[in-house]
Length: 589
Ligand SMILES: O=C([O-])CC(=O)C(=O)O
Ligand SMILES: [Mg+2]
Image (tube, rainbow, N blue to C red; front, side):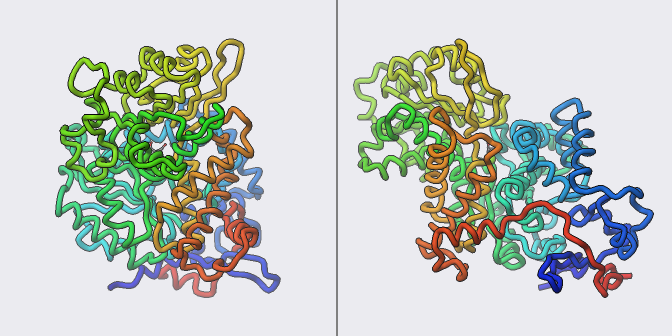
């Protein structure tokens, strides 16, 4: 096994004689300014400029971080399109990471839709044309054979959080080939900005197993591998090698599987979740988010989960994940399996998931297949109940969309829900906005403001009938940064279902306590506070379940645990730099 590239040790964080932290850099001169993790640009002090051989390479005026932010924010304001703003911020990230995160945290609500959904969808689609800088690890059929060497090229020595996608089902927009790297990058930005993970503790990964998109395969400018997707044993071997390489180089890392299609998502999760600590964001993160929102929505009606009849639309990773978490939530409220079955319906593209239609072939769908007897006496036009017929006959009070099918929830469907309940819960969760099942303004209009709504992508508040409605963003961003950070801080050997459920419960509790009576989710500006609470309670759950390998926290009180996690949150600041004695040596000069 080759040792990690010696050049990757660019710096060490140390403490001086007064206990103050500083960065000892092994790289000086022009190359130092090229490393976004270290580059302070105009923020280097005079002493640093002299000591580090960069005097004269940056403008004479020395900026504070807040001056830099002001200047950068003005330039940001001159961008004229969302994708332009996205590229601007990504370029900043690739130039000066402390400045990027400091600016992002100051303007989280404004910039989240630019860096994350919906604009990230456009960035994924255009990734080959907007690609600039080597961020993240590209594992492909051309290097997976020696991936244990390739991973040593990563210039980070203590990665704790990896987001990896095979891009087979990016958001609601399907196979995106290599472009999915933009999702891994975007999600990890949230781990840092919202979760508090250290900026040098993250690694975005694209698992380029190929693409089945003819247009990409035919495009000479497409930056991924030009071959069809691996399947079956070849696919498994590819991922096995990746997982082994991660476990070897970064034994403390947690992997978030992101945007895998139904065909691979459940398989990959189950194959590896006990090999390396890992979770699937679209199954578990989205599931936890949805159940938290449903608890909050039911509370507004003076009810609980078990008073609702749920129709989950979509049987991909998101849909089945959401259905699974609703199921767990109903069981926790004391319902039997049979009672859950009468209250939880999953609708696929062809209609209600009902026995004898081939759904049995996939183990992950089995708990949600309705027996024929369940639809006896239903009024149906054909054999398999349609979405509308399911809503009508089952008496649905809550409908959730995870289909990527824009406009699927029409007026007729919504009116059918009003026949079942005065306050229908309607969550069109598909991302990005262009793929949403219904526009919230239409839902408010059709229900005269009675619908309780949450969407996956952000919406501005909407006026209806003289009232202003805030639309909750039901996005897994309320779950994964805290879930992952809690798992990192507790050094969880496994991410258990209990930890995921605890994340959901925390989000529901937080909303009830802090967000006002009409809120289904907190506002995005509170993402950092929510994530901190999620992290604390997830870490506690890991200790309770005996999967925490972090001895220091094992006997801590809740308060001490919260302090421990808060102390380890990273906040953007410029630490003083000192030149290390072996600066030239590390550069190989
Ligand atoms: O990325 C998001 O906004 C939420 C998510 O995981 C998805 O839609 O796949
Ligand atoms: Mg996703």
